[in-house]
Amino acid sequence: MVTTTSRRARGVRGAFAGALLAGLTLFTSAGAAVADDPSASASPGDEGPGPTEAGTTFRTATALQQGQSGTAQASAGDYLYWVFPADTGQRATVKATVKLPESEARRSGSTWQIDVYDGLRRRQACQYGHQTRKAAADASSVELSCVLRTVRSWSEPWANDPLPGSYYVRLTVVNLPANDLGLPFEAEVRADVVDAGGAHHVDGALAEPLVPGISVTSASAAPKASAGEPEDGWASGWWTTRWLWTVGGGVLAALAAVFGYSLTRGRGRPAHVPHGL
Image 1 (cartoon, one colour):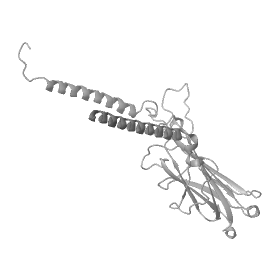
Image 2 (tube, rainbow, N blue to C red):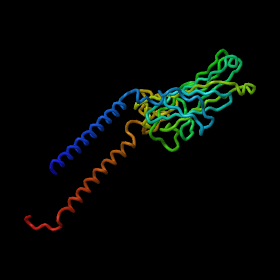
Image 3 (tube, helix red, strand yellow):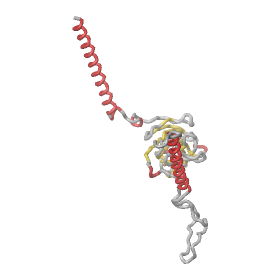
Image 4 (spheres, one colour):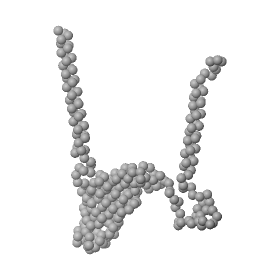
């Protein structure tokens, strides 16, 4: 009787364990299906419309996701700030549209500008684009753009290279008659980021030396250094001191490895080995 009861208890425990395992498997499969569903993992920029206000300082800058647009209504003379992230290898393009009331735009010769700063609040240069523009006499909007340099993974302490982190966008009017201060306008800002890849990375090497003009040497003249060129030639070719240090370091590392191996092998053998062994 005890044996039958024990078997029944084990059977009940086994059935309970099987049911629990089946439930966990079903729950895990459902979670994986939800995770794989594209509609369940929309990017932050697709969650809906962007913010409808902007900050007035670096500290109060409105956050934007990559590829998201932000709008704001303000008065001419105000500083508007947004902030967005950019990572290594990415190149950001910032676009801004300033919309003015049609009647006000025709009588106002306002000039608008966007500036981009990194997380250390260093102003970043635009590779190209229309960073500053004046409102045309017959236009009610001004289009601005700034294409930043590709974000690098490292930089010298004294350099101003773009590094991974936050980037602040500042929009303001830089030229406006005094009686037009407070002119209402609507702004729209968007930051698009693309992976530039290795084609836009730099390694600190110059293809050609930076010299004024072009050095020309007559073919009939005796070989000699061109004007503005060192007697031993430029050192910015493929053979540089970097190669010398690299090869020298490799040789030293190989010698150190051989020497260490010989020491280790010598210490592993007995100091006195009987003759004939």
